[in-house]
Image 1 (cartoon, rainbow, N blue to C red):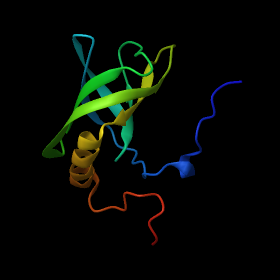
Image 2 (cartoon, rainbow, N blue to C red; image 1 turned 90 degrees about the horizontal axis):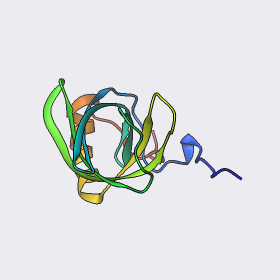
Image 3 (cartoon, rainbow, N blue to C red; image 1 turned 90 degrees about the vertical axis):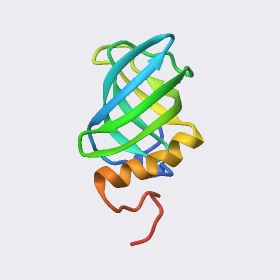
Image 4 (cartoon, one colour; image 1 turned 30 degrees about the vertical axis):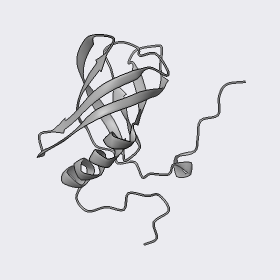
Length: 118
């Protein structure tokens, strides 16, 4: 039986459909890829080659819309094996803290938790 994919509303953090650049370092190589969504806990990226599920990667999140950047470690939570290659990256706690400022810089004041009222 394939692993269960959580429903979008089961996420702890709200996801924002934003496109921005991600510098991803893994296994001694660096690639600049494009993120397709972002939340405090992680992001989905389109990468040049498939990543290994469970691998630790170093990230630098940046956008032309702001000088604010976020850098730190993440873990590959899921990945595709066929092009276009995509991966879900789960941020480490320090990167998640920086992601809050990065999100607010590119999307403005927002509710970041999915269960926030109003």
